Length: 146
Length: 414
Image (tube, rainbow over all chains, first blue to last red; front, side):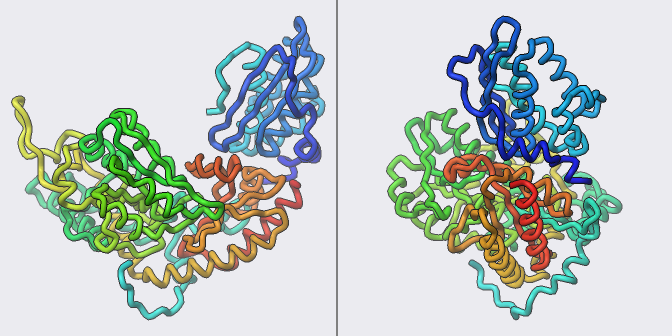
C-alpha cells in the first residue's frame, strides 16, 4: 500500500488550491452530490451553451480525493462538448473501478489512477463526476454515492 | 455507581493483549493498532471459544424440548441472563430482555411503552449529543402519535445543559431518552441527577448505555432509570446481541412488541395470551450463541476488574489528550471534564477521511465520519471528525503511534 500512489503531487496540489471553486450565478445547470458515509457535499454549477460546457464551478466540503477530483474534472471538461465530457466520465470511471481505462489519454486526470488501489476511497473520486452527469441530465434530485 | 472495591494494581495490559487473537494481525505491514473500540470492540479468545463451544456441543432451540441439548441451551441462555442481571445490578432476571442491540432496545421501548404512553401534544426529551439510534426511534414515535421531540442543548465542551434540561421537563413530558456516554464526544452524563429530575415528575427515563458499560460500572437500581440498553459488541462480546433492562413494573404494563413463538402462553384463532416477563418481549428463536458470548464478555470484564480497566483507560485518555492537543492545527471536539476514553478531533486543512487512510496505511484503525451523530457535527460546524477510542488492550505506545501518524499525515496533506 503506497500512499504516494494515492496522494500524488497533482492530487495534493489540487486539494490545496482547487481550481474553479465557487458558484456560477448564471449557470444553466446545477446539481448536488452527497456522500452520506463521510458527510461530503458537493454543489456544482454548470454553464452550458448549446452543446458546449462553457464554464463550471463547484463548492462544498470533501476529502483531498473528492476535492482534487472535482478540481481536475472542472479543468478537464471546461470548453468540451457534452459528448466529450461523457467519454471522459466513462474513461475515468473505468480507471477508478479497475474496469480498465487508458490513463495516457486522460492527461492530468490520470493522477486519479492510484485511487483504484483504495476501494474505500473510490466513491470520493467519483462523486464529482456523478454530480456532473446529474447536472447535465437536468436531474433535480441530489446525487448520492450510496 | 456500584461501590467497586478492588485492589487497584495496574491492569496487566501485556497479558490482556495476549487474550485477543486479532491483535496479532499486521495491517499493511504494521502491527494492528485498533482504536475504533467505540464502534465495535474486539473479542478475547474466551468469548470466541465460548460461542464456538456452544455451537460445537450444546446447540438446540431454547424453552422447547425436553431433550438434553435443548435443556443445555436453555440453561446457557438463562444463565447469560442472570450474568447480565448481575452486571447491571437489576433486581430480577424478569427485567433483562435480550435484543439484537441497543438500537433494537430503544425501538422496542418506543414502539411498546411509547405508543401506549404517548398522545398527541405530549413531549419526548432527548439531548443534542444523542446517537441517531436515540433520535430516530423517537421521531418515528412522534410522527405516529403527534408528540413533539424537544432537544436539550450542549455547550462548546459537549456538556449537556442541566438547567435547560430541567426547564424542558414540563407537564406534557412523558419520556426522557439520554445517552449515558456520548459516542461522538465521550461526554459522561451525571445520569443519576438527570434520572432523578425526571422521576420526580413521573417521566419515563430511557438510557442508551452502549458507550458506558465497557468503561464504567453501571447499577440500574442506583441510577433509578426505567430502561437501560446496551450492546455486547461494544464490550468485547459478539454482534447481534444486547440487553434491554426494564424496571419490572414498567415492563409488566407494556403491550407486546413483536409477535411470534416464545412470547405467548397460548394461541388460538380467538386470541392469544402473553408469556411472562421477560419472554413476552423475545418473540422467535433468540440469539443463544450471542447470549453465551455476552456472558463470556461479562466474565472477562469482571475478571479484568472494572475499576482497574477504568483507571487504565483514563490514563490513555489523559495521554492522548495531552499529545494530540500539542499538534498544530488540531482541535479536540468534545472536551467535557468527565469523559470516557475517546478523542474526537478536527485537523485544519485535512479531511478526516484522508487522515483515516494515512493512518490505516500504518496499521492504525480509527473512525472517521459523522459517528451517527449528525446533530453533533452540525453543532460544532464540522462535516465529520476523526475519532480514536480506546479499550482495555490499548497502550501508551499505541497513543504515541497515533500521534506520529497524525503528524505525518498532516505533513503529507496540508
